[in-house]
Image (cartoon, rainbow, N blue to C red):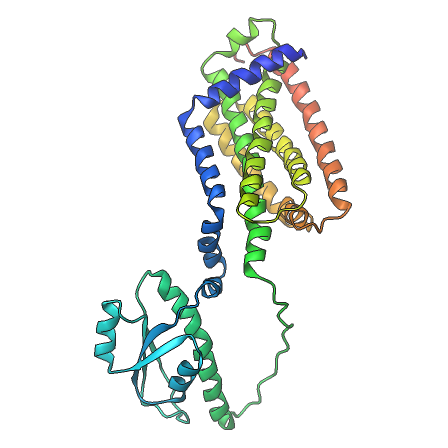
Length: 360
């Protein structure tokens, strides 16, 4: 292969990508998300673990207490996070609708030692962030009251419950788990998936638009054309993943081993890109190639995630500085797979070059 011919193909495809508004908007959107990740992480982490919302709120919320007097009212007052306002139910619901209260709790007149369950009703505003925070704060108080009811009624148990021993909470932060276990791995591996799908478009459009004939009428070979497109897509991966990591770092997220992460991601992306290139060379039609490739990627991901040292876990370990020498072993294995696929691409392009001009 001639470097000059490869550079021409790379520049041609990168220039074409720059003219694609859809791709540019997608990249800009990803950069925007990474730039303001410190704000978005709070919302995303609340979906992963809603209790994280309460850590950012030191506000005391007004809650209406309606119904029968009970120990629950004392628990609410002693929580230190809730201001209790005794009132009737209708008045409380009206003030809740006017957003003058954060929640309304109604306690029925069921005695604590009754054989009937104590059905407490909680009123919150629908689809409201504040309601999610209040719900988390009230949960601890309600669990405390539930335990009191259990203690009062335990004498009626006919069967002694089996005690369950749970491991002690290590105190790990949900934000730590979310950022390093999910967010960073997904963000840096996303460009690899995008690049592998992009190489299919670049190759199949040459066949479908009949521009491959023009390229092959020059001193370029099909091998150089295909590898130029592969390298163009591979160049996008470290640029995009690196931008993610830099912007996350600027948002105060400490990431260890950025260079190691980029090397691992480039190796994984090369494997996916080569698979995508082979799929495109075989089908030569975008829709069929993308469908088969997407199905193959899903199957590969299912098998990969079953392995302890899968790409997501490996990136998470490197980002936290806990990866050992096994990261280089995995890199070597992935590198060997990439070399094997490169030889397959080389063999297939020689075979395909014989029929490229005829379309056979």
